[in-house]
Amino acid sequence: MDEANAVRDRDHKFLTQAVEEAYKGVESGDGGPFGAVVVCNDEVVVSCHNMVHKHTDPTAHAEVTAVREACKKLNRIELADCEIYASCEPCPMCFGAIHLSRIKRLVYGAKAEAAIAIGFDDFIADALRGTGFYQKAQLEIKQADGKGALIAEQVVWVQTNENAEKQQYSIEIREINN
Amino acid sequence: MDEANAVRDRDHKFLTQAVEEAYKGVESGDGGPFGAVVVCNDEVVVSCHNMVHKHTDPTAHAEVTAVREACKKLNRIELADCEIYASCEPCPMCFGAIHLSRIKRLVYGAKAEAAIAIGFDDFIADALRGTGFYQKAQLEIKQADGKGALIAEQVVWVQTNENAEKQQYSIEIREINN
Image 1 (cartoon, one colour):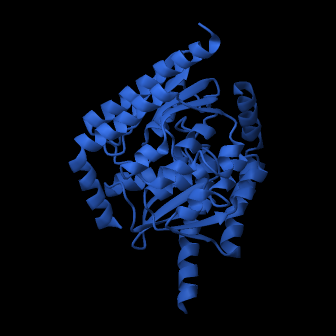
Image 2: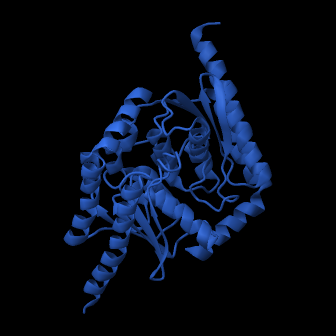
């Protein structure tokens, strides 16, 4: 197997785990259909999903949660020797957290548009396209290949179908509060 | 007193509290010299400072901490009826958290350049200048007037002088990890 294939298989393995976390989030009702895994020296440090509803915390996206938990576990505020695998393209808040933690590499599955299509805020797409801070960031960013992206996008759509009532409830709550 | 003066005095009062929080952060060594206050109906909901070192959490900036604590206290994930006062211009991560929580108004003191000048990452400036998601954000953003900006900038410089050794330590740690 050549090196490119080895990297692809490794990325696929960890991205699949991030997608499995996203499914756990959907099943538990903890939050949106998003998962993230932090890897250090080929070992999974933490595997987390969105906890926004569970923790009543709009900052508890999968990636922010994963950065927090990884720092707690490794007992340091910098993760320069770590990679993060995210089931979906990180929003600007999450991208900021990844940048601040000095994570060296980000691999993501679904494009932001998949989440926007089911009603998430379209600001998600702004971190990785057309913004100043993306261009300044010093980390390698890779979108998964076709297969990885496909399984990552499916979790978003599964959530839409299974949790249609929850979605509706969430929209109603937002309308009441705004 | 006309309405503009009343708004200015009110903003100055809450911004001063955010700056006092920043001083508490400096004195306690909990994190960087930054404070944030969430206000709802003219009442302070929470008053927080940067807890990055205290919590070993690179996401524990003052504004993210304030959003999390306010949501916990009010037991909801949306703060559409709240304002946030930040001693310094929020970084992209914090601006994302403010945006996601639907806070309706942001008032900040020091410009990002004040923090960048003492060694903080220059990506701080990207949230409020030249990025796509700023333009899409639906909140009112105001920089404090001359007096408010001045007291807010002073806290950054005080930290530089008093904590010069800590700063040096932090830079050394970063160099080791990168």
